[in-house]
Image (cartoon, rainbow, N blue to C red; front, top):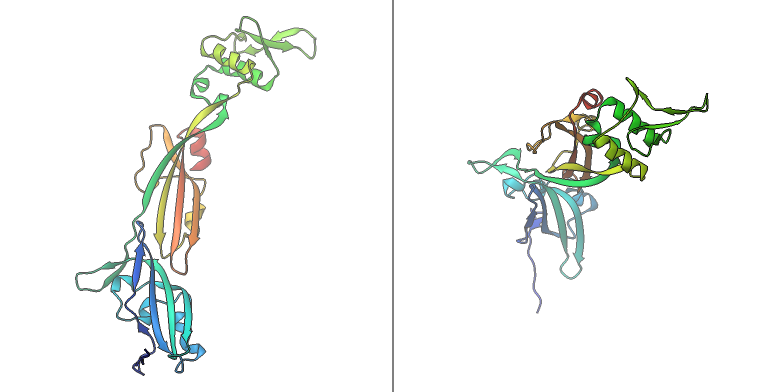
Length: 278
Protein backbone atom coordinates (compact mmCIF):
# COMPACT_ATOMS: atom_id res chain seq x y z
CA UNK A 1 0.00 0.00 0.00
CA UNK A 2 1.38 3.42 -0.88
CA UNK A 3 0.39 6.92 0.02
CA UNK A 4 1.25 10.52 -0.60
CA UNK A 5 2.57 13.06 1.89
CA UNK A 6 1.39 16.64 1.37
CA UNK A 7 3.51 19.46 2.82
CA UNK A 8 2.54 23.10 2.85
CA UNK A 9 4.94 24.81 0.44
CA UNK A 10 5.35 27.76 2.80
CA UNK A 11 6.74 25.58 5.56
CA UNK A 12 10.25 24.21 5.12
CA UNK A 13 10.67 22.14 8.27
CA UNK A 14 7.88 20.14 9.89
CA UNK A 15 8.60 19.13 13.51
CA UNK A 16 7.23 15.69 14.32
CA UNK A 17 5.53 14.46 17.47
CA UNK A 18 8.60 12.63 18.78
CA UNK A 19 10.15 15.47 20.80
CA UNK A 20 11.81 13.78 23.81
CA UNK A 21 13.81 15.27 26.67
CA UNK A 22 16.26 13.80 29.14
CA UNK A 23 17.27 16.00 32.06
CA UNK A 24 20.05 15.54 34.61
CA UNK A 25 19.68 16.47 38.26
CA UNK A 26 21.90 19.50 37.59
CA UNK A 27 19.45 20.95 35.05
CA UNK A 28 21.30 19.91 31.92
CA UNK A 29 19.19 18.72 28.99
CA UNK A 30 19.60 16.55 25.93
CA UNK A 31 16.59 16.46 23.62
CA UNK A 32 15.78 14.76 20.31
CA UNK A 33 13.43 15.93 17.56
CA UNK A 34 12.72 14.77 14.03
CA UNK A 35 11.95 17.24 11.22
CA UNK A 36 10.53 16.54 7.76
CA UNK A 37 11.20 18.71 4.73
CA UNK A 38 10.73 18.51 0.96
CA UNK A 39 13.89 17.35 -0.80
CA UNK A 40 13.35 19.18 -4.11
CA UNK A 41 12.77 22.58 -2.47
CA UNK A 42 15.95 22.55 -0.44
CA UNK A 43 19.43 23.60 -1.38
CA UNK A 44 22.58 23.21 0.69
CA UNK A 45 22.16 26.67 2.22
CA UNK A 46 18.61 25.82 3.35
CA UNK A 47 20.00 23.27 5.80
CA UNK A 48 22.08 25.84 7.70
CA UNK A 49 19.45 26.06 10.52
CA UNK A 50 20.63 22.54 11.46
CA UNK A 51 24.23 23.65 11.87
CA UNK A 52 25.82 22.84 15.21
CA UNK A 53 25.04 25.53 17.78
CA UNK A 54 21.81 26.85 16.23
CA UNK A 55 18.86 27.23 18.59
CA UNK A 56 15.80 25.00 18.75
CA UNK A 57 13.39 27.94 18.52
CA UNK A 58 14.78 28.93 15.11
CA UNK A 59 13.64 25.56 13.79
CA UNK A 60 10.54 25.23 15.91
CA UNK A 61 9.29 28.69 17.02
CA UNK A 62 6.34 27.15 18.86
CA UNK A 63 8.52 25.01 21.13
CA UNK A 64 7.92 25.32 24.90
CA UNK A 65 9.72 28.41 26.16
CA UNK A 66 11.66 26.50 28.81
CA UNK A 67 13.49 24.69 25.98
CA UNK A 68 14.03 27.70 23.72
CA UNK A 69 17.75 27.93 24.40
CA UNK A 70 18.62 24.36 23.44
CA UNK A 71 21.17 24.21 20.63
CA UNK A 72 21.85 21.73 17.84
CA UNK A 73 24.43 19.14 18.83
CA UNK A 74 24.11 16.76 15.88
CA UNK A 75 21.79 16.54 12.87
CA UNK A 76 21.58 13.46 10.66
CA UNK A 77 19.57 13.81 7.37
CA UNK A 78 18.03 10.75 5.72
CA UNK A 79 16.59 11.08 2.19
CA UNK A 80 13.58 8.93 1.34
CA UNK A 81 13.86 8.53 -2.45
CA UNK A 82 10.30 7.33 -3.03
CA UNK A 83 8.57 10.14 -1.19
CA UNK A 84 11.07 12.91 -1.94
CA UNK A 85 11.18 13.80 1.73
CA UNK A 86 14.14 14.54 3.97
CA UNK A 87 13.90 13.16 7.50
CA UNK A 88 16.36 14.98 9.76
CA UNK A 89 17.00 13.57 13.20
CA UNK A 90 18.39 16.27 15.50
CA UNK A 91 19.97 16.08 18.96
CA UNK A 92 19.81 19.29 21.00
CA UNK A 93 21.69 20.07 24.17
CA UNK A 94 21.61 22.87 26.73
CA UNK A 95 20.05 23.80 30.05
CA UNK A 96 16.53 24.37 31.34
CA UNK A 97 15.20 27.94 31.47
CA UNK A 98 12.83 29.42 34.04
CA UNK A 99 9.09 29.35 33.39
CA UNK A 100 7.21 32.54 34.22
CA UNK A 101 3.57 32.89 35.30
CA UNK A 102 2.77 34.63 32.01
CA UNK A 103 3.60 31.46 30.11
CA UNK A 104 6.93 32.63 28.77
CA UNK A 105 10.48 32.29 29.96
CA UNK A 106 12.21 34.63 32.36
CA UNK A 107 15.57 33.88 30.78
CA UNK A 108 17.22 32.55 33.94
CA UNK A 109 18.84 29.13 33.81
CA UNK A 110 17.30 26.58 36.13
CA UNK A 111 20.47 24.72 36.99
CA UNK A 112 21.12 23.14 40.38
CA UNK A 113 24.61 22.25 41.65
CA UNK A 114 25.20 18.99 43.47
CA UNK A 115 27.76 18.48 46.22
CA UNK A 116 29.81 15.54 47.43
CA UNK A 117 32.51 15.06 50.04
CA UNK A 118 35.01 12.21 50.30
CA UNK A 119 37.48 11.19 52.92
CA UNK A 120 40.61 9.18 52.14
CA UNK A 121 43.97 8.21 53.59
CA UNK A 122 47.36 9.02 52.09
CA UNK A 123 50.96 8.56 53.16
CA UNK A 124 52.46 11.65 54.81
CA UNK A 125 55.85 12.30 56.48
CA UNK A 126 55.79 11.30 60.12
CA UNK A 127 56.99 14.75 61.19
CA UNK A 128 53.63 16.12 59.97
CA UNK A 129 51.69 14.02 62.49
CA UNK A 130 49.82 16.18 65.05
CA UNK A 131 51.58 14.39 67.95
CA UNK A 132 54.98 15.08 66.37
CA UNK A 133 54.10 18.75 65.93
CA UNK A 134 53.11 18.92 69.61
CA UNK A 135 56.63 17.95 70.77
CA UNK A 136 59.06 20.52 72.15
CA UNK A 137 61.68 21.99 69.81
CA UNK A 138 64.60 19.98 71.25
CA UNK A 139 62.76 16.68 70.73
CA UNK A 140 61.90 17.67 67.16
CA UNK A 141 65.56 18.52 66.54
CA UNK A 142 66.79 15.13 67.76
CA UNK A 143 64.13 13.21 65.86
CA UNK A 144 64.91 15.25 62.76
CA UNK A 145 68.53 14.11 63.01
CA UNK A 146 67.32 10.51 63.22
CA UNK A 147 65.19 11.02 60.12
CA UNK A 148 68.16 12.53 58.28
CA UNK A 149 70.38 9.62 59.31
CA UNK A 150 72.95 11.97 60.88
CA UNK A 151 72.45 10.65 64.41
CA UNK A 152 71.94 7.27 66.11
CA UNK A 153 69.71 6.64 69.11
CA UNK A 154 71.32 5.17 72.21
CA UNK A 155 70.17 1.92 73.81
CA UNK A 156 68.29 3.76 76.54
CA UNK A 157 66.23 5.62 73.91
CA UNK A 158 66.69 8.99 75.60
CA UNK A 159 69.73 10.39 73.76
CA UNK A 160 71.10 10.31 70.23
CA UNK A 161 74.40 11.28 68.74
CA UNK A 162 77.13 10.52 66.27
CA UNK A 163 80.84 10.68 65.59
CA UNK A 164 82.14 14.23 65.47
CA UNK A 165 83.75 14.57 62.00
CA UNK A 166 86.29 17.06 63.42
CA UNK A 167 87.53 15.40 66.61
CA UNK A 168 86.43 11.86 65.92
CA UNK A 169 84.70 11.61 69.28
CA UNK A 170 81.12 10.62 70.03
CA UNK A 171 78.94 13.69 70.42
CA UNK A 172 75.33 13.90 71.54
CA UNK A 173 72.78 16.01 69.67
CA UNK A 174 72.85 19.41 71.34
CA UNK A 175 69.79 21.45 72.23
CA UNK A 176 68.97 24.66 74.01
CA UNK A 177 70.48 23.39 77.29
CA UNK A 178 73.16 20.93 76.25
CA UNK A 179 72.61 17.23 75.45
CA UNK A 180 69.03 16.60 74.36
CA UNK A 181 67.16 13.95 76.34
CA UNK A 182 63.78 12.83 75.05
CA UNK A 183 60.87 11.20 76.82
CA UNK A 184 57.24 10.15 76.36
CA UNK A 185 55.92 10.43 72.80
CA UNK A 186 59.33 11.47 71.49
CA UNK A 187 60.74 8.07 72.49
CA UNK A 188 57.85 6.33 70.71
CA UNK A 189 58.66 8.30 67.54
CA UNK A 190 62.38 7.48 67.94
CA UNK A 191 61.59 3.75 68.09
CA UNK A 192 59.38 3.96 64.98
CA UNK A 193 62.03 5.90 63.05
CA UNK A 194 64.70 3.38 64.08
CA UNK A 195 62.52 0.59 62.68
CA UNK A 196 62.24 2.50 59.40
CA UNK A 197 58.72 3.82 59.86
CA UNK A 198 58.90 7.40 58.58
CA UNK A 199 55.37 7.95 57.25
CA UNK A 200 51.84 7.62 58.58
CA UNK A 201 48.30 7.42 57.21
CA UNK A 202 47.01 10.99 57.03
CA UNK A 203 43.28 11.65 56.51
CA UNK A 204 42.45 13.85 53.53
CA UNK A 205 39.07 15.30 52.57
CA UNK A 206 37.91 16.42 49.13
CA UNK A 207 34.75 18.43 48.50
CA UNK A 208 33.36 18.48 44.96
CA UNK A 209 30.80 20.78 43.33
CA UNK A 210 29.23 19.66 40.04
CA UNK A 211 27.36 22.12 37.83
CA UNK A 212 25.95 22.37 34.33
CA UNK A 213 25.66 25.72 32.61
CA UNK A 214 25.49 27.47 29.26
CA UNK A 215 28.78 29.19 30.09
CA UNK A 216 32.14 27.73 31.01
CA UNK A 217 34.65 28.76 33.64
CA UNK A 218 36.03 32.28 33.42
CA UNK A 219 39.71 33.20 33.67
CA UNK A 220 39.06 34.53 37.17
CA UNK A 221 37.70 31.11 38.19
CA UNK A 222 40.94 29.42 37.14
CA UNK A 223 43.07 32.11 38.79
CA UNK A 224 41.79 30.87 42.18
CA UNK A 225 43.47 27.49 41.75
CA UNK A 226 45.75 26.83 44.73
CA UNK A 227 44.11 29.49 46.90
CA UNK A 228 42.17 29.20 50.15
CA UNK A 229 38.55 30.06 49.46
CA UNK A 230 35.01 29.50 50.72
CA UNK A 231 33.31 26.82 48.59
CA UNK A 232 29.63 27.11 47.67
CA UNK A 233 27.18 24.83 49.43
CA UNK A 234 28.50 25.42 52.97
CA UNK A 235 30.53 22.19 53.41
CA UNK A 236 31.34 20.99 56.95
CA UNK A 237 34.65 22.55 57.99
CA UNK A 238 36.42 21.35 61.15
CA UNK A 239 37.87 23.97 63.46
CA UNK A 240 41.41 24.90 62.48
CA UNK A 241 41.01 23.98 58.81
CA UNK A 242 40.21 25.74 55.53
CA UNK A 243 39.32 24.69 51.99
CA UNK A 244 41.74 25.16 49.08
CA UNK A 245 40.63 25.13 45.43
CA UNK A 246 42.58 22.21 43.95
CA UNK A 247 40.78 20.98 40.84
CA UNK A 248 38.56 22.94 38.47
CA UNK A 249 37.74 20.83 35.41
CA UNK A 250 35.34 21.33 32.53
CA UNK A 251 33.84 19.35 29.64
CA UNK A 252 31.68 20.61 26.81
CA UNK A 253 28.71 18.92 25.11
CA UNK A 254 27.71 20.62 21.89
CA UNK A 255 27.59 24.39 22.10
CA UNK A 256 26.15 26.10 25.12
CA UNK A 257 26.33 23.20 27.59
CA UNK A 258 29.24 22.78 29.99
CA UNK A 259 29.85 20.21 32.71
CA UNK A 260 31.88 21.87 35.45
CA UNK A 261 33.48 20.12 38.41
CA UNK A 262 35.25 22.07 41.12
CA UNK A 263 37.24 20.26 43.82
CA UNK A 264 38.41 21.62 47.15
CA UNK A 265 40.88 20.03 49.59
CA UNK A 266 40.85 20.52 53.35
CA UNK A 267 44.12 21.99 54.67
CA UNK A 268 45.29 23.23 58.05
CA UNK A 269 44.43 26.82 58.86
CA UNK A 270 47.83 27.94 60.11
CA UNK A 271 50.20 30.85 59.64
CA UNK A 272 52.24 29.16 56.89
CA UNK A 273 49.21 28.19 54.79
CA UNK A 274 47.65 31.62 55.26
CA UNK A 275 50.87 33.19 53.97
CA UNK A 276 51.24 30.83 51.00
CA UNK A 277 47.66 30.34 49.83
CA UNK A 278 45.67 33.44 50.68
